[in-house]
Image (cartoon, rainbow, N blue to C red; front, side, top):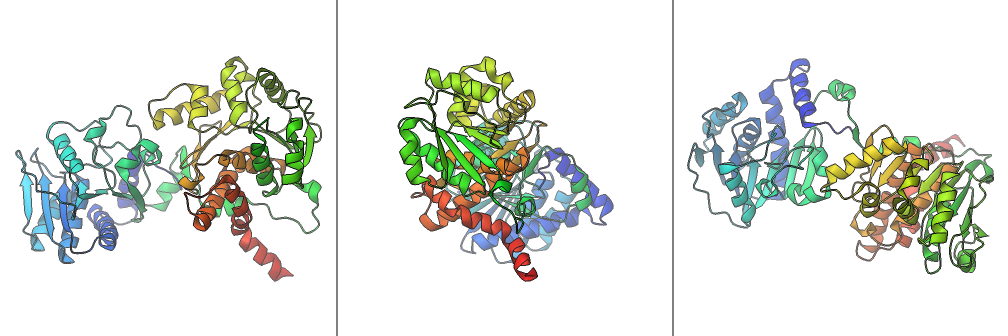
Length: 513
């Protein structure tokens, strides 16, 4: 799914009206009907609906919702803020329709506003301002927003919380943005919805399809996408009947140190559960028995050092390498990691301490091989790019780094983002907070390394790897609950996650037989 900018969404509306034989007011009516359906499904008639509408089309949506809620028997109070004395044409049409339907609890504010007493049983429909806002709210409107936020009422925002900008809120005034419990957005999610600091502003958000032109969306250029399951199913390469282990690559994991052997075990188990034909783990001698016992399917190559990674491995036999899980940052390890990475001749995944070492020895960053996949969490990324004031800046700098290094960056977290060297960003929809547990990143490294070894491209490995990692996490959460989940639970759920992506293919094979 494409993520359009707010400007593009406005163009999409105009294009739909011009080419799909639909009027602006009818698009508004459809949006309001879908939003009303969502609101009535969540709140029954015991709740008072307090609608706060602005003078533009966002306000028109809110007024149409007020009419529909009134006709369904809800107690509705409407406040229309018309301080300039000018309403958009569609907003004015919905004022007339509201009066015609018999809704008398209507107040139009041109100067002074006496706010209603809001209780925990009230639902505020926020339709003050939409996605066209280009500056922070101030004065009276800011006061209205702060009043709503301070109340115990639940809030539904129409398209976007009033005061929020759809992409970059770096220079916005946070306390002057509505804090919604539910945001019902139209056509395409806003980029700002994917940033952690905005979660308390958007609440839960849903995208509503009002029939925006498919042609416009298909031709619209964007650098931001949400990965969808059909794409991932199409990526999975079916296994040929006469295939053997050599067809699925030999992966190498350089992982583990004294006291951190578990990271190597987790990465290795995930790698084997993700289809690698062969796996070798290069690890300090102290982890030899642990790996042979816990992952008997993997081969173990001992490093020269008892406790730390100290000597680069030979890569002639491998199709891909993952490095960094549980390595530590000893001086001898740093030297070995830099040598291993800068001389690497196979597709490479860098995680954890490999990233931390390169952030400490920044002069070696330009020598990371092109096409390398970096898998940082927020802290590891900021060690590479510097401190960031918000998620928009962080993502922008990640895109710059990917372009400079000609590498792929998998920025881990909710909506894990895969950033390509061209600056394209794919947000991953799977996963849950239960995955915020030690070792989860090691599992992802193992999965992506396995996919590279099998011949998937870097972009495919990143997107498919993050998707199945999150899908396995969702399966684990259903089995164990988010609080009790461990990284090992994610690995145990990988077979089911992979099976879900290959089900139709397996059925076809069975039918053929």
